[in-house]
Structure formats: C-alpha cells, structure tokens
Image 1 (cartoon, rainbow, N blue to C red):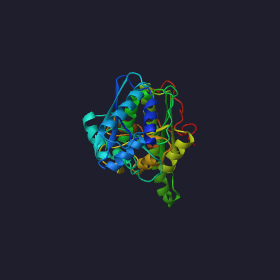
Image 2: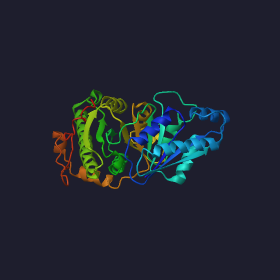
Image 3: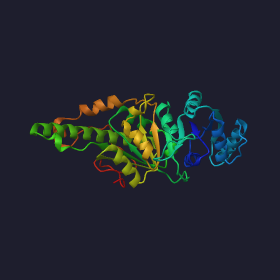
Image 4: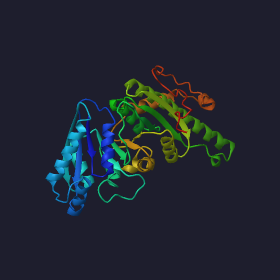
Length: 349
C-alpha cells in the first residue's frame, strides 16, 4: 500500500500524523510525507515558523525538518517505510503531479471544520484534492487525537443503490488496516410525501415504487455486509436503512454514534458534483466531526449483474407485502450484528 500524507506545519499536520499512527498498516506500506513550498517567500517563512524554525527558510531546511518528522513517525509504525518529499508550487497541482508519479492507494490531507479558506495550504486545498485525485482521499479533521491501533474505530459507511457504493464496498473489503473496526452500513432513503398521494392511483404507484426501492437497497445492504464479513477486516458489521434528508441524517448519525471515520464511494476524475450522493459528499466532508474518506477511482466488478439478479427475483406480491423472497446463494455467517435491515445500526439515532 502506498500513501501520500500532506503536511503544512499546522494543527492539521498533527491530526494527519495521528491518523497514520492510529492504524496497523499492511506490512510493506510506503508512506510519503509531503510538504509544498509556495512560491511566495513570505508565506514560506510563515510555514517554517509553524514548523518551529526561524525565518532562515530554504528548501534544504524544510527537507531536514520533514525528514525528522518521518523518522520520528517511523519509530511508532512497524513494517512500514516512511520517507519525505518537499515540493514547490501550487499545493494542489504539486500534490496531484506527485501522485501521478508515486501512484498512491490513498491520499491523506488535513482540513478545518466549517471555517473560511485557509490562506496557508490546507483550507480549500483538501476539497480540490478530493475533487481531482485519481485515488481514495481521506480528509482528517484538525482536532484528531492519536488512538491505539488495537482499540478499533467506528466506521460509518453511507451507501446507495449505485455502482460507486458497490465499488467502495469491494475496496473496503480488503483494507486490513480497519481490521479492528465496527462498520455500520447506512442507507438514507427519501420518506413518503403526502404531496404524492393526490389520488388513489398515484398513492398506489408511489407506495409500490417506495417499497421496491427500499427492498432493493435492503437486499444490497445484506449482500454488501456479507462481502465485508468475508474479507474478515472488521470486528463487527451492522446495517440499516432510515428515512430522511441525506446530509442531516448522515451527520446526525455520525455525531450520535460517534463515528471515527465516514467512508463514502465516488466517481473517478469527474468532479466533486458527481460524487455518489451528489453534493452530499462535499457537505459531509466539510461538516463532519470526524475524518471522511472518499473512495475514488474504483469500479465494481459485478454490481449490475447482482442488481439484475435481485430485481429478477422480486415480484409484485413481495412489494405489496414488503416481504422479499430473494433467494440468497448462502446466508451470511460470523459476527453479523443488525440482522434486521429495517433498523438503523445501534447508537446512530
């Protein structure tokens, strides 16, 4: 596994390092600590001051400081290689250009919550990297404390009926660094609206559509939970659906649990407006209390085939009774909490 961690000398850098120190990364992981020197020398001096150095600022001094941080971090991580790289130029362009040659599996960057654009480095920079990066991106909150890799984390995984959610599940299935985690799969569906019930026919059609969509996502949730269980990279897996507005519901659930990490699926290099739940992902990454990891650049191997097979097994009588008769290949096994897909994961609401 190859990781780029962007540091700027602020509190965000401490949080980014704490994120790296809070997990058992796979043996052989290569972490590259990256700092970008802007072209403006006045800003460069400010950066050096943030790193605890004087105003005698040049690339060599910055490289020395960053190398020391890499050595100190490496002492706390086993079987992981950590090195550093000083780049010069626009932060977003420099980091993405480096990513094109380093080919990371994950980019980690810091960000404040609900604040104005940071004029130093990592204000709107994190959102720009999220939009343009070819791989998964983790945006770490500026107040993240270091936790023990053995303590496990609460991972909230909002999903919908899309190929991008399916791809994110397949990606998460093999992330052994989340082995001690509790993963909660959550689907937020639009509630029934009285405005759609103007006539008996419209009410019937609306109810049928609602139940069909609900049934489909519940079956997908069950299959995705089984896939994650097969990967063996989670201590516990729960799943559930809830009606509501996606932005508010996800943030509320993450806060109440509380979640340590939110994972969401996304398109590849197509712009942040096309994230799996649209502008919801941008809103979540800006306002969540915890770290948000957006899975990008991945494709699902069998989403369309699985979805078609589910729909072929759904009949009108099932929809009317909301009792799916979908025939699973085999029932999920192991530590699978939350077996009732109608109930949101424990503690979220």
